[in-house]
Length: 115
Image (cartoon, rainbow, N blue to C red; front, side):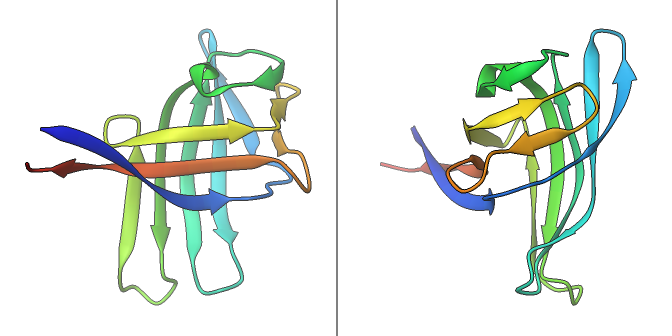
């Protein structure tokens, strides 16, 4: 059975997400991030408390729900059902920042392909 990563580009630019600290981890809240096309994201991203540039290895957990804004279809991304692609993501410990215009923060659902 092969696993294939189906990327759904969630974030091309995020200016700030608030942080709450737990032991050796930083939890960043996503509060109704509106993409302007009817899709809204909310949830959390947890890092290993690294300050500065981040890679996907620094993300230890995430639980993000994206809905179409009218209560219809949606997706839930977690570290167990999806992968992360990061480019130009950094933190000062209080917020996550995706560099504009080339920064990327994407989550893609894992799908199973039956051969």
